[in-house]
Length: 114
Image 1: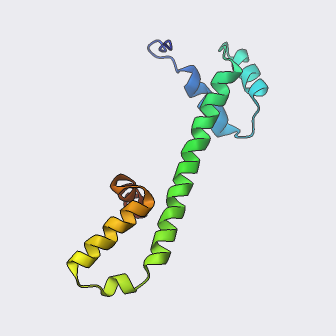
Image 2: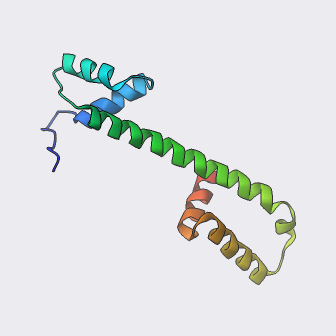
């Protein structure tokens, strides 16, 4: 189990995220050397783990935006003319199935709100 940072200290992962935000193209050896100067000892695995988590988060956001764009492009204006409630509900259920479930559809709708 990972050791928690003491009160008032910033965790190693938080320091790594700070470095990656300042310089996204930094290599593991450069980051390890920079943190070693500050007295923080990390290994390359921790660096790559944190870098991957940041990259994955960006990728998931990008993928969600692309899905929203695809959905809005395929819906067109014809869906706005539909007054039949049952047909609209069936379209929403079908759309939810296409994007991977109602939770993902809800997150896409929330992404549109931003």
